Length: 244
Image (cartoon, rainbow, N blue to C red; front, side, top):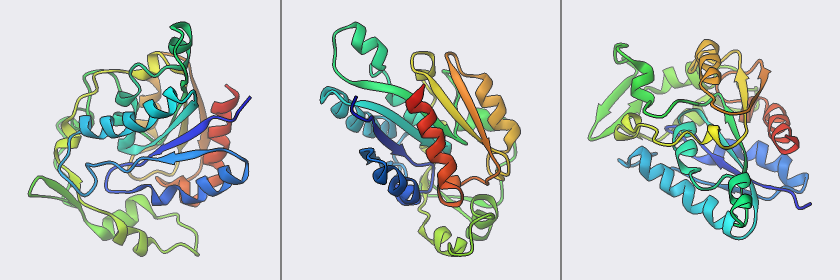
């Protein structure tokens, strides 16, 4: 059987650049890949706009008969989940339709219930001082980003260089509520990152309990960005989704 296409969705403030180590390994294994940069990163688009951008890519692959694994990181878990409506492989096969998503992979990502958003998860927490609102966007303090996102980067990767690549994030994207929980229709795999300083392990473990269908978990000792620090762990998680 033809290998599935792996589609990558980044988190807030980031493009898909940080997936390159993972994509390189998968390409060498023969997997086709695709990336979706979110319009909310560097813009003022909504979570729904992000979901539409992802759906545009995955629906085309499905219509072409491709089996798809959707890989999501951090905030990307929300629009990624939202985007998978009508794209379940199993449901499409039952309806005589081609292609579809065979698995959802959450890499320290927001796996939430319908009606929830980034802001609802934050609840009544005080707005952190390292985030600045400006013209409909949220700017992330670069030194704090190094501490939260890149603290465990290998010596050959410059945390400062990665922080400089960050873009402002649309403020509206964080209030967008999930309207479709794809994890009730599509099997999920969650990579728990035990040293994460952005989405603490306790919050990730809570997200896992929100899954409404089949979910498998793996653990690694990375921070928030295992795509760069431990790409093999991310690849193994994706391969687990392939086998499932």
